Image (tube, rainbow, N blue to C red; front, top):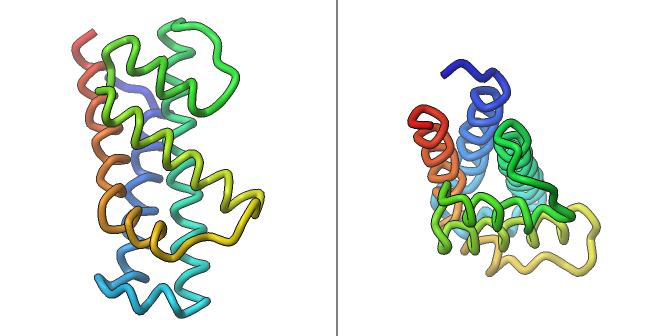
Length: 138
């Protein structure tokens, strides 16, 4: 499989996770540092954008239909057995966090930010693995 868009989006995901981990340093106290917090949030936002871009690209090249929101992109991947229901749900939640970060609908909860860092960054890598597996085996 040679799809530069998929490869580039996966590299972006890896880079963003690396940057989040560099700033977080496995220490929740780093979230109280505004500079580190801003860098972490920005990289999670970029990570979410790359996840959405990756999902939309797969939907487009496989002609899986149309979507109205980023949430629907993950639902379409789930419906087509590319990702699990649990992963779809987690990615949809990350999209919700991205919307808060981008549009500043409300103050970002540091507890939620910590949970994302500690429990859900791996979801982006799982998305990448599942898409690669799907594209290679189709």
